[in-house]
Amino acid sequence: MSGELSTNINIKEPRWDQGTFMGRAKHFFMVTDPRNVLLSSETLEEARVIVHNYRAGVVKPGLTEDELWRAKYIYDSAFHPDTGEKMLVIGRMSAQVPMNMFITGSMLTFYRTTPAVVFWQWVNQSFNAIVNYTNRSGDAPITVNQLGAAYVSATTGAVVTALGLKSLTTRLPPIVSRFVPFAAVAAANCINIPFMRQRELKYGIPVTDENGNRLGESANAAKQAIVQVVVSRIGMAVPAMAIPPVIMNALEKRAFMKRFPILNAPIQVGLVGLCLVFATPLCCALFPQKSSMSVSGLEADLQERLRQTSPQITTVYFNKGL
Image (tube, rainbow, N blue to C red; front, side):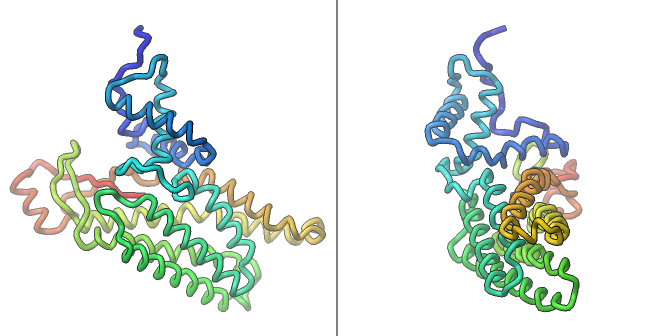
Protein backbone atom coordinates (compact mmCIF):
# COMPACT_ATOMS: atom_id res chain seq x y z
CA MET A 1 0.00 0.00 0.00
CA SER A 2 1.37 3.41 -1.00
CA GLY A 3 2.27 5.76 1.81
CA GLU A 4 0.89 8.80 -0.06
CA LEU A 5 -2.82 9.65 0.00
CA SER A 6 -4.67 9.26 -3.31
CA THR A 7 -5.73 12.46 -5.08
CA ASN A 8 -8.97 10.83 -6.27
CA ILE A 9 -11.05 11.60 -3.16
CA ASN A 10 -13.90 13.97 -4.08
CA ILE A 11 -13.85 16.55 -1.28
CA LYS A 12 -16.24 18.80 -3.20
CA GLU A 13 -19.02 16.48 -2.01
CA PRO A 14 -19.91 15.43 1.57
CA ARG A 15 -18.13 12.41 3.00
CA TRP A 16 -21.32 10.40 3.59
CA ASP A 17 -24.10 9.23 1.26
CA GLN A 18 -26.59 12.11 0.99
CA GLY A 19 -29.28 9.78 -0.32
CA THR A 20 -29.93 8.51 3.22
CA PHE A 21 -31.08 10.39 6.31
CA MET A 22 -28.22 8.92 8.36
CA GLY A 23 -25.65 10.07 5.81
CA ARG A 24 -27.10 13.58 5.77
CA ALA A 25 -27.24 13.64 9.58
CA LYS A 26 -23.55 12.71 9.88
CA HIS A 27 -22.68 15.43 7.38
CA PHE A 28 -24.61 18.14 9.23
CA PHE A 29 -23.29 17.09 12.63
CA MET A 30 -19.88 17.98 11.19
CA VAL A 31 -21.08 21.19 9.49
CA THR A 32 -22.79 22.54 12.63
CA ASP A 33 -20.14 21.34 15.13
CA PRO A 34 -19.94 24.32 17.58
CA ARG A 35 -16.35 23.45 18.48
CA ASN A 36 -15.27 24.85 15.12
CA VAL A 37 -16.10 28.36 16.35
CA LEU A 38 -13.22 28.08 18.83
CA LEU A 39 -10.58 27.15 16.25
CA SER A 40 -7.66 29.57 15.91
CA SER A 41 -6.84 31.54 12.76
CA GLU A 42 -3.73 29.38 12.35
CA THR A 43 -5.82 26.17 12.36
CA LEU A 44 -8.27 27.63 9.84
CA GLU A 45 -5.43 28.74 7.56
CA GLU A 46 -3.78 25.32 7.79
CA ALA A 47 -7.08 23.66 6.77
CA ARG A 48 -7.46 26.13 3.89
CA VAL A 49 -3.97 25.34 2.58
CA ILE A 50 -4.55 21.56 2.82
CA VAL A 51 -7.85 21.80 0.91
CA HIS A 52 -6.57 24.17 -1.80
CA ASN A 53 -3.41 22.13 -2.31
CA TYR A 54 -5.33 18.84 -2.47
CA ARG A 55 -7.69 20.27 -5.08
CA ALA A 56 -4.60 21.26 -7.08
CA GLY A 57 -3.22 17.72 -6.79
CA VAL A 58 -0.66 18.48 -4.08
CA VAL A 59 -0.84 16.17 -1.05
CA LYS A 60 0.77 17.12 2.25
CA PRO A 61 3.31 14.39 3.22
CA GLY A 62 1.87 12.00 5.78
CA LEU A 63 -1.70 13.30 5.37
CA THR A 64 -4.34 10.65 6.13
CA GLU A 65 -7.85 10.44 4.67
CA ASP A 66 -9.42 11.26 8.06
CA GLU A 67 -7.18 14.34 8.38
CA LEU A 68 -8.15 15.42 4.86
CA TRP A 69 -11.86 15.19 5.63
CA ARG A 70 -11.35 16.99 8.94
CA ALA A 71 -9.56 19.82 7.09
CA LYS A 72 -12.35 19.92 4.50
CA TYR A 73 -15.05 20.36 7.15
CA ILE A 74 -13.01 22.96 9.05
CA TYR A 75 -12.52 24.85 5.78
CA ASP A 76 -16.22 24.62 4.90
CA SER A 77 -17.18 25.84 8.37
CA ALA A 78 -15.24 29.10 8.06
CA PHE A 79 -14.82 30.03 4.38
CA HIS A 80 -17.54 31.04 1.92
CA PRO A 81 -18.06 28.29 -0.70
CA ASP A 82 -18.36 30.74 -3.62
CA THR A 83 -16.00 33.61 -2.75
CA GLY A 84 -13.49 31.74 -0.56
CA GLU A 85 -13.53 34.62 1.94
CA LYS A 86 -13.46 33.97 5.68
CA MET A 87 -16.99 34.41 7.03
CA LEU A 88 -18.09 36.47 10.02
CA VAL A 89 -17.87 34.20 13.07
CA ILE A 90 -21.47 34.54 14.28
CA GLY A 91 -22.79 33.98 10.76
CA ARG A 92 -21.14 30.57 10.32
CA MET A 93 -23.18 27.35 10.53
CA SER A 94 -20.94 26.24 13.40
CA ALA A 95 -22.16 29.27 15.39
CA GLN A 96 -25.83 28.29 15.04
CA VAL A 97 -25.99 26.20 18.21
CA PRO A 98 -24.22 28.58 20.65
CA MET A 99 -25.89 31.72 19.27
CA ASN A 100 -29.39 30.21 19.14
CA MET A 101 -28.82 28.66 22.57
CA PHE A 102 -28.30 32.12 24.06
CA ILE A 103 -31.02 33.90 22.06
CA THR A 104 -33.69 31.19 22.35
CA GLY A 105 -32.93 30.67 26.04
CA SER A 106 -33.38 34.40 26.59
CA MET A 107 -36.65 34.48 24.63
CA LEU A 108 -38.02 31.65 26.77
CA THR A 109 -36.81 33.22 30.02
CA PHE A 110 -37.88 36.83 29.41
CA TYR A 111 -41.32 36.43 27.89
CA ARG A 112 -43.54 38.04 30.50
CA THR A 113 -43.17 41.76 29.64
CA THR A 114 -43.83 43.52 26.34
CA PRO A 115 -40.42 45.31 26.16
CA ALA A 116 -38.63 41.99 26.72
CA VAL A 117 -40.69 40.26 24.00
CA VAL A 118 -39.97 43.04 21.49
CA PHE A 119 -36.26 43.19 22.35
CA TRP A 120 -35.53 39.46 22.08
CA GLN A 121 -37.58 39.01 18.89
CA TRP A 122 -35.56 41.90 17.42
CA VAL A 123 -32.28 40.30 18.53
CA ASN A 124 -33.34 36.97 16.99
CA GLN A 125 -34.24 38.48 13.63
CA SER A 126 -31.06 40.59 13.62
CA PHE A 127 -29.07 37.39 14.07
CA ASN A 128 -31.03 35.70 11.27
CA ALA A 129 -30.23 38.65 8.97
CA ILE A 130 -26.51 38.30 9.75
CA VAL A 131 -26.64 34.55 9.01
CA ASN A 132 -28.49 35.11 5.73
CA TYR A 133 -26.03 37.81 4.64
CA THR A 134 -22.97 35.78 5.65
CA ASN A 135 -24.20 32.72 3.73
CA ARG A 136 -25.48 34.62 0.69
CA SER A 137 -24.88 33.12 -2.73
CA GLY A 138 -21.85 34.39 -4.60
CA ASP A 139 -23.60 33.86 -7.96
CA ALA A 140 -26.91 35.51 -7.03
CA PRO A 141 -26.10 37.70 -4.04
CA ILE A 142 -28.74 39.12 -1.71
CA THR A 143 -29.15 42.84 -2.35
CA VAL A 144 -29.25 45.34 0.51
CA ASN A 145 -32.89 46.07 -0.35
CA GLN A 146 -33.83 42.38 -0.22
CA LEU A 147 -32.02 41.92 3.07
CA GLY A 148 -33.63 45.02 4.56
CA ALA A 149 -37.14 44.08 3.41
CA ALA A 150 -36.80 40.55 4.80
CA TYR A 151 -35.35 41.85 8.07
CA VAL A 152 -38.08 44.44 8.66
CA SER A 153 -40.89 42.10 7.57
CA ALA A 154 -39.71 39.15 9.68
CA THR A 155 -39.09 41.32 12.74
CA THR A 156 -42.52 42.95 12.40
CA GLY A 157 -44.20 39.57 11.88
CA ALA A 158 -42.45 38.04 14.90
CA VAL A 159 -43.25 40.96 17.20
CA VAL A 160 -46.89 41.24 16.08
CA THR A 161 -47.39 37.47 16.49
CA ALA A 162 -45.73 37.43 19.91
CA LEU A 163 -47.63 40.42 21.27
CA GLY A 164 -50.94 39.27 19.77
CA LEU A 165 -50.66 35.79 21.28
CA LYS A 166 -49.37 37.22 24.55
CA SER A 167 -52.55 39.26 24.93
CA LEU A 168 -54.69 36.22 24.08
CA THR A 169 -53.02 33.99 26.67
CA THR A 170 -53.55 36.26 29.68
CA ARG A 171 -56.59 34.22 30.75
CA LEU A 172 -55.08 30.84 29.92
CA PRO A 173 -52.81 28.63 32.09
CA PRO A 174 -49.25 30.03 32.49
CA ILE A 175 -47.75 27.10 30.56
CA VAL A 176 -49.52 28.30 27.37
CA SER A 177 -47.81 31.70 27.42
CA ARG A 178 -44.43 29.97 27.46
CA PHE A 179 -45.02 28.80 23.88
CA VAL A 180 -45.61 32.33 22.52
CA PRO A 181 -41.91 32.76 21.53
CA PHE A 182 -42.07 29.59 19.43
CA ALA A 183 -45.16 30.79 17.56
CA ALA A 184 -43.40 34.09 16.87
CA VAL A 185 -40.27 32.36 15.56
CA ALA A 186 -42.35 30.07 13.33
CA ALA A 187 -44.23 33.05 11.90
CA ALA A 188 -40.98 34.93 11.29
CA ASN A 189 -39.50 31.97 9.38
CA CYS A 190 -42.58 31.81 7.17
CA ILE A 191 -42.02 35.48 6.29
CA ASN A 192 -38.23 35.80 6.31
CA ILE A 193 -37.19 32.92 4.06
CA PRO A 194 -39.61 33.61 1.16
CA PHE A 195 -38.65 37.31 1.31
CA MET A 196 -34.94 36.47 1.20
CA ARG A 197 -35.50 34.18 -1.77
CA GLN A 198 -38.14 36.21 -3.63
CA ARG A 199 -35.89 36.43 -6.70
CA GLU A 200 -35.99 32.63 -6.95
CA LEU A 201 -39.79 32.64 -6.71
CA LYS A 202 -39.93 35.13 -9.57
CA TYR A 203 -37.25 33.78 -11.92
CA GLY A 204 -36.83 30.19 -10.70
CA ILE A 205 -33.83 28.13 -9.62
CA PRO A 206 -31.62 25.95 -11.83
CA VAL A 207 -32.87 22.40 -12.36
CA THR A 208 -30.61 19.64 -13.68
CA ASP A 209 -30.65 16.01 -14.69
CA GLU A 210 -29.11 13.36 -12.41
CA ASN A 211 -25.66 14.09 -13.85
CA GLY A 212 -25.83 17.80 -13.06
CA ASN A 213 -26.52 19.00 -16.62
CA ARG A 214 -28.56 22.20 -16.45
CA LEU A 215 -32.02 21.93 -18.00
CA GLY A 216 -33.50 25.33 -17.19
CA GLU A 217 -34.97 27.37 -14.32
CA SER A 218 -38.14 26.57 -12.41
CA ALA A 219 -40.15 28.70 -9.98
CA ASN A 220 -42.11 25.58 -8.97
CA ALA A 221 -38.85 23.95 -7.86
CA ALA A 222 -38.06 27.13 -5.92
CA LYS A 223 -41.41 26.89 -4.11
CA GLN A 224 -40.72 23.28 -3.11
CA ALA A 225 -37.20 24.19 -1.97
CA ILE A 226 -38.42 27.11 0.14
CA VAL A 227 -41.17 25.01 1.78
CA GLN A 228 -38.58 22.37 2.71
CA VAL A 229 -36.25 25.00 4.21
CA VAL A 230 -39.10 26.61 6.20
CA VAL A 231 -40.13 23.19 7.56
CA SER A 232 -36.51 22.44 8.53
CA ARG A 233 -36.01 25.83 10.21
CA ILE A 234 -39.24 25.51 12.22
CA GLY A 235 -38.35 21.90 13.04
CA MET A 236 -35.03 23.07 14.51
CA ALA A 237 -36.91 25.35 16.88
CA VAL A 238 -39.52 22.81 18.03
CA PRO A 239 -37.46 20.79 20.58
CA ALA A 240 -35.59 23.84 21.90
CA MET A 241 -38.75 25.92 22.30
CA ALA A 242 -41.21 23.18 23.33
CA ILE A 243 -39.30 20.89 25.72
CA PRO A 244 -37.60 23.46 28.03
CA PRO A 245 -40.86 25.35 28.79
CA VAL A 246 -42.52 22.14 30.02
CA ILE A 247 -39.50 21.26 32.19
CA MET A 248 -39.15 24.81 33.54
CA ASN A 249 -42.86 25.03 34.31
CA ALA A 250 -42.45 21.97 36.55
CA LEU A 251 -39.13 23.09 38.08
CA GLU A 252 -40.36 26.54 39.03
CA LYS A 253 -42.87 24.93 41.40
CA ARG A 254 -40.01 23.29 43.33
CA ALA A 255 -38.75 24.80 46.56
CA PHE A 256 -35.13 25.11 45.43
CA MET A 257 -36.12 27.15 42.36
CA LYS A 258 -38.21 29.46 44.52
CA ARG A 259 -35.19 29.92 46.80
CA PHE A 260 -32.76 30.45 43.90
CA PRO A 261 -34.72 32.07 41.04
CA ILE A 262 -31.42 33.26 39.57
CA LEU A 263 -30.93 29.67 38.32
CA ASN A 264 -33.88 30.05 35.93
CA ALA A 265 -31.94 31.61 33.05
CA PRO A 266 -28.83 29.36 33.08
CA ILE A 267 -30.93 26.17 33.40
CA GLN A 268 -33.18 27.29 30.56
CA VAL A 269 -30.24 28.20 28.32
CA GLY A 270 -28.57 24.85 29.10
CA LEU A 271 -31.72 22.90 28.22
CA VAL A 272 -32.09 24.84 24.97
CA GLY A 273 -28.45 24.14 24.08
CA LEU A 274 -28.88 20.42 24.71
CA CYS A 275 -31.88 20.33 22.37
CA LEU A 276 -30.19 22.41 19.66
CA VAL A 277 -27.05 20.25 19.53
CA PHE A 278 -29.22 17.46 18.12
CA ALA A 279 -32.14 19.34 16.54
CA THR A 280 -30.01 21.60 14.31
CA PRO A 281 -28.16 18.88 12.32
CA LEU A 282 -31.07 16.41 12.37
CA CYS A 283 -33.54 18.96 10.96
CA CYS A 284 -31.01 20.15 8.36
CA ALA A 285 -30.95 16.49 7.28
CA LEU A 286 -34.73 16.11 6.89
CA PHE A 287 -34.55 16.74 3.14
CA PRO A 288 -31.69 15.99 0.71
CA GLN A 289 -29.62 19.05 -0.21
CA LYS A 290 -30.00 17.88 -3.81
CA SER A 291 -33.80 17.69 -3.91
CA SER A 292 -35.88 16.33 -6.76
CA MET A 293 -39.29 16.67 -8.34
CA SER A 294 -41.18 15.06 -11.21
CA VAL A 295 -41.08 16.76 -14.60
CA SER A 296 -44.90 16.87 -14.40
CA GLY A 297 -44.54 19.30 -11.48
CA LEU A 298 -42.63 21.87 -13.54
CA GLU A 299 -44.06 24.85 -15.42
CA ALA A 300 -45.90 23.96 -18.64
CA ASP A 301 -43.37 25.63 -20.95
CA LEU A 302 -40.41 23.87 -19.30
CA GLN A 303 -42.27 20.54 -19.43
CA GLU A 304 -42.88 21.00 -23.14
CA ARG A 305 -39.24 21.92 -23.81
CA LEU A 306 -38.01 18.83 -21.94
CA ARG A 307 -40.45 16.56 -23.82
CA GLN A 308 -38.95 17.80 -27.08
CA THR A 309 -35.26 17.85 -26.10
CA SER A 310 -34.98 15.19 -23.38
CA PRO A 311 -38.07 12.92 -23.42
CA GLN A 312 -36.28 10.26 -21.35
CA ILE A 313 -36.01 12.56 -18.32
CA THR A 314 -38.81 12.06 -15.76
CA THR A 315 -37.17 13.64 -12.69
CA VAL A 316 -35.19 16.86 -12.25
CA TYR A 317 -32.89 17.91 -9.39
CA PHE A 318 -32.11 21.20 -7.65
CA ASN A 319 -30.25 22.61 -4.65
CA LYS A 320 -32.80 23.41 -1.94
CA GLY A 321 -30.54 25.75 0.06
CA LEU A 322 -30.33 25.89 3.86
